[in-house]
Amino acid sequence: MHIPVIRNVLEANEKMADAVRKRLLERGILALNLISSPGAGKTSLLERTLRDLTGKFRMAVIEGDLQTSNDAERVAATGAQAVQINTEGGCHLNSAMISRALDELSLDDLDILFIENVGNLVCPVEFDCGEDAKIALLSVAEGDDKPEKYPLLFNLAKVMILNKIDLLPHVDFDLARARAFASKLNGNLEIFELSCRDGQGLEQWYRWLGQAREAKKHG
Amino acid sequence: MHIPVIRNVLEANEKMADAVRKRLLERGILALNLISSPGAGKTSLLERTLRDLTGKFRMAVIEGDLQTSNDAERVAATGAQAVQINTEGGCHLNSAMISRALDELSLDDLDILFIENVGNLVCPVEFDCGEDAKIALLSVAEGDDKPEKYPLLFNLAKVMILNKIDLLPHVDFDLARARAFASKLNGNLEIFELSCRDGQGLEQWYRWLGQAREAKKHG
Image (cartoon, rainbow over all chains, first blue to last red; front, side, top):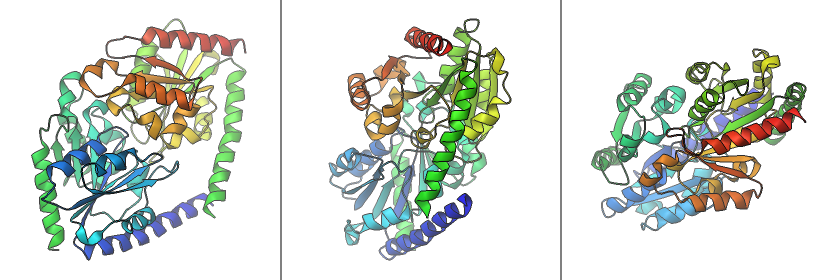
């Protein structure tokens, strides 16, 4: 009885994800689904990106958390549009939640939509939210073995961000090892090393964002 | 249709967890379920604990991971008994997995059983594995807001370990804030601050382990 129910849930999610994708495509909005462990730095990356690219792109964030609206408040403080989804214990966002959140946003004034998923390296990976790309974040404080131990995310993501590289002198993290595992899972993975604390490496991420937005707009 | 199925899954899990608990109680084995985000340092804490307390307690570890047997190999290198469970994509351990793993262990030669759950702050919390206590780990690199954002674990755990405190000079983590949130959720929570890298704070954790084992033995 268990397995068919799960399959129906995933099928229903994919159908709704396609509807979300269509709605965003009509307006040329690039949608990115940020997935990581709790505390890898998704919200900090968004705060920094929203501030640095204000005036260049019109951006919005859908925040997913079990509880609280802390993260939506943090990103809204940058001036971006923000919607908070509380899953009330749920371990991932799904496309029905995103569809409802889109109703709260002014889509005609938008170039890029960031979806910050619930902090979890496992469950969010299976639920398509209608995004153009999944962005995997990995903090160097978490260990270089994570791509090997949680392979599905790194297999499906278009980008892996190795975050908090300012901590490299203080932790045992082998950048080459993490890169090698991730690239073995996914030969097309783009990998950026950066620090939201001191700003190093952000320009490569911003360049990728600009190119992805251009491609979506024209295509 | 969805909700009743989940309820049955949880009920079946609890029934099996009670059987696991009975089996461990008969032998006075203390069972601890370690839960945290990926990369918070569960395996490193176990490696250190197993090495430092060799000769004092007879210990075993059941390792839960989506893939690989890296963690079981790491803890087995200390001389402890170790069993690896691969969930093949599953986001948590359950009591049926633990029951099967117990068959692989020599239970008559055991004082303490550590269960290292899949790295995930959400899903493992709801699945009783027959343990005496859940041990929550939080690395200071993850941010002091995690007890507020993932409250169920900190509400149900008996111990919260604030790990990697050697990184405190390099991250924005307010120990008092993390402690205050967690204690608000759970007035009886024991909190230990430690670093497996430089060894500070471990003695408090070892003292708690010894007391918990004594209490279980005398029952």
